[in-house]
Structure formats: structure tokens, C-alpha cells
Length: 217
Image 1 (tube, rainbow, N blue to C red):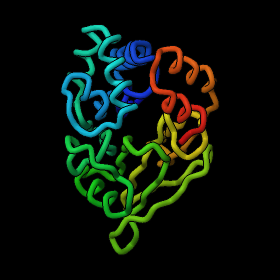
Image 2 (cartoon, one colour):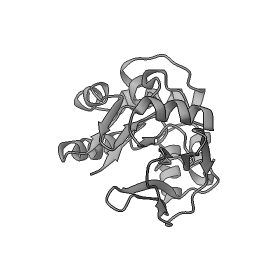
Image 3 (tube, one colour):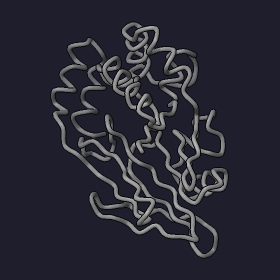
């Protein structure tokens, strides 16, 4: 089963192609959730810097009406026991809060009600785990190394960003969960990010967006 945790538009120059691919995944049964950038296509508002605003406006102009309706109709979270999926935080999915500390991870994990919680929104991969004292602790995973995530403790994975990682590594980031072996593996995959950056420039979008794709920041 695939789970796509949102923000399909708002940074790059392939909004139509990305949403088309995501719609096919949804038709095949994938979990597809709304991110804050996706929500901004239909409902303007919220804080976005000038670069993100420009990319959002460009997406609004280029996406088809069916694609816009698809993004507008996406849910904010999904439960598929023993897992919970959300773009931001299970504590308040509609507020777009960041899970970027042990405290916010604990609130998110408690709100999800499942032993495994998967979040997007934060672009760097991190695994939080529940300690014997009931707190959360952060662990920085190594790509390609399976991590045992057995009970009874709770686990929360920040899965990373395919299109715009921010750890100074431009390789695409994603995460796999084996719910039989109870293992989580974080992955990085190289792609032609220079071509992606060139598309951003040729579309007339802010150069800063291209630079972020090239440098992974």
C-alpha cells in the first residue's frame, strides 16, 4: 500500500504531471492526503513566503479544474491500523503544525491513537520513539538500514520529502514500513535534480526555488 502525505504542488514546475500521477495512485487504492500547499490552491490564506506564493499562483494557473477539485477533496488524515497518516500533526491536522521536537511528536502520537504514526510537512527524515518514561526521543536514521520498531512503545516517522529535502542532500527521500516484520527503512534516491531546477527557471518561477532543489536546503 502506498501513502502520499501531501504537498504535491507549490514548489516545482511539474504541478500538472505530479497531480496526474497522484490521481492514478489514488485510483489504485493509495492513501492520498492534503498538504498545506494543496489546500492553498482552493483556499488562499495562511503564511507562505514570496517564493512559495509565486509557485502556488503558477500552479493555480496551470492545473486543470478536475485536478483542482481532486486536491480540494483530499482528506487531512487517514487511519489504517496499526498506522495513522497525516501531513502535519495528528493533534490538529488542520492547523498545519510542525512535528519538529520530542514534545510535538508526543502530542501527535497521543492524538493518532495508533502505535505507528507517519507525518510529512517537515522535510528532514526523523524517527521518534517512546521511551520507558513515556516521553519521545528523536533518532536520525541512516538511509537503507531497516530499523526494528516493535511494541509496546509508540513510533512516529517523519518520512522526508521527495521533491525538496532540506538536509543539504538533493536526493529524493521516502520511507517504507514493513508491518509484518515491524521494520521502518528510510531511503534516499538520486534523480536528475538539475533538470528539475532548470524547469523551475524556464517556467519563470523564483530562482531561489531552483537553488533549493539543486542544493537540498
